[in-house]
Every structure is written in C-alpha cells, then in structure tokens.
Length: 271
Image (cartoon, helix red, strand yellow):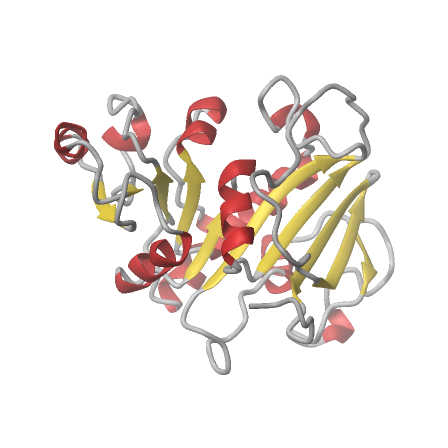
C-alpha cells in the first residue's frame, strides 16, 4: 500500500506510513494512525464515519454482496475501521445479505482499545423498523458485546420482546415505525458510543446523508466494471443541495484506491 495524497500529521511523519514511497503492507498500528478518529475537542459529541466500496462504474454490490468487488487490502482497512469504532451501524437488509456476525476482538488493537476506554470489540447496531430478524444467528446469540437494535417507537411489541429474549438491546430512535438518523446518533452517544462507523447498506447511508449527519466517508474504489443495475453506495431521495466533502488522504494498492473524505465545513450547502 502506498500513499498518494498526504495526511495531516498524526505522529512522527519521518517514519510514518509509506514515507519511503514504496509499496508494502502497512502494519495495524500504521493503518490505525492513518484512520484515527479526530479528537473530540472542537467537534460535536459523535463522529459518524461510513465505509463503503464501489466499482469504477458505481456499483456498490455484485450479486447483492460487496465481497466480490473487495480485496485483501480493502478487508485490512475494513478490519482497522471496525477496530477503531465504538459501534458498527448496519441496516437490517445488509445484515441479512452479508451474513453479519459479531465483531471480533483483535489482539493487534486490544491495548489501544483498553487505553481508549473501549470494549474489546465494537457493538453492532442493526437499524430495523420491523425487527424481522433471525435471532438465532450468532450476531444475537454469541456476541462479545451485546448487539443493539435501533428501531422506532411503533415497532411491534412482540418483536421487541423476541429481540430482548435473544439478548439484544432494543433502542428507540424514532417516533413512528422507522428510525430518525439524528436521534439514532444521540441514542448511541447516550450509551457511550461516540466513535461511530456505518457500513451501509446504500439505503441507510442515503438516510444519513439526507439528514446531514455523516461526518466522513471512507470509500474504496475497486478497479472493476460490473454494468448491471446494482445500487450506488447511497440511495434514497436526493439532497436539496449537494453535500461537499474534502479529500483527507488517498492510498493505493494493486489498483484499489482508498479515499478518506470529510465534510467540508466551508461548503455553503452544509446544514
């Protein structure tokens, strides 16, 4: 992996990732430094980061899953972003399609998580209006940290009861059947989760974008063409004014580009 666009200083850059300009596999510590969450000073309480992958022609999936358009380097970044987060937020359909399992503890990040006051692994928070989920799956029966379910106040009581019997914690984040994106972030912050990561899918990411609460996008551009009618990384209604993000860093390995973008605070279209 090599750096194509410089990062703001995070540590001693003279010995930092890719300082020799050569392709090599970065260590977990180097990736963690490259993707560190910003310090809480001068920003709002939570920081919502999205991690998505897209082909050259804009497909976020192939045959309904992201794995076919991913790579080993993409999975290393994926694992690093999870290891830095307090909670991983995913839509119910993504959980079903991708076969979500509990996030695992990783020895490479254990000490850093302890020092940051984090649990051994991030919790997974599933966004679901219907709670029509298979509660016999390991995501609910054997997580290292109890799985959360974000839903609306009008969710069916019997489904809430089933989720709680399975060991999940149900969190109300909306007045109706659905979840309000801003309220979801507030609810997670009240549980002590401020370093947030969403892995989509496209519909959920579109809701965060429309609500104006997405702070950062980590986008892998896969050097593949798929054609077809696969979803983009974000779907749903268009925003009234396009949201501008600024490029923070750009990495490359074997033709895969790993971009990190943050909300451009100078964009007049920001809310």
